[in-house]
Image 1: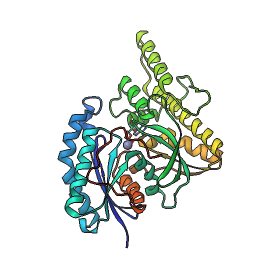
Image 2: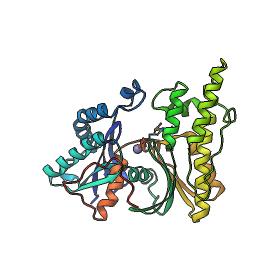
Image 3: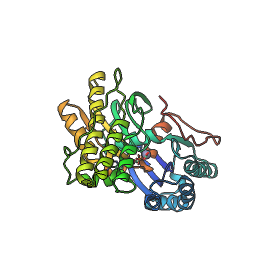
Image 4: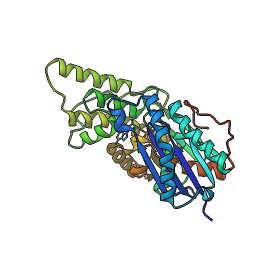
Length: 336
Ligand code: KG4
Ligand code: ZN
């Protein structure tokens, strides 16, 4: 009989629940996004996010169960994001999961949000499995991991400063695109020329680590100079050029990681994996280096609970169980 995992995600501004079959098949996935609400403040306001999670979690759970056509008696484990993320927001998911487990006598599995993003690949390609290299790019993280097994991964390199999503969001705000910046920048770039503006290519010697502060500062300087001279930014051109610069750095490091490890299976994870330029560049890299490629479906790139239920399934099958003393861990690292 199929193993059903219930996933709960509340690490940032999305309240999400999902029911997954055997870690791979999505029975139901609901997302209540607060993004429109937070856009008036130009970013997520943590305290307001927590309160909105409290309001959204019970209806989200009931609708997910109805959509999945099952009851809590059919669920094998409750998998919840325990970190990293906003502590107040995480606590809503964690407390709800614990309450459910206590009342229904179900096993509790705490999931690392970034492991969840990686599992989005398992929901996108039924045949995709470790080992592989994963370029993880979200609002708070940018790193390349060697995923040796479902629950065994090793860092290869990471950003020394901003995450890729953060670098997109900051510049999108400055050029007037608003929040959330990444998708808006992506959209604006469609009709732009990626060679219209140029940015420095950062290099960190003796390491594959990357940095976006130089590109970001150069972008800010260019914007200020143009504005001081009474000119205007060509938004599509600027978006296309800036996006190209960030994605080129990420893909260059992934290329080096492929060469260094000899691993010829690559994939993307995290909100920025929705970016059209990054998806195009990784497809080109896979072709050039003859790598097998997995790119997450758009629905599973940004925060959702299906990916948490999938990652949690593999933990559950390997015997991971958390107790009622499990907390929310805002700075949780991947267990590597
Ligand atoms: O993974 P995610 O949903 O949340 C975190 O765990 O951080 O990632 C959100 C990040 C934001 O910075 C957002 O701007 C970025 O992903 N993002 C994009 C795109 N869609 C989302 N960045 C570039 N292009 C996109 N299409
Ligand atoms: Zn995320």
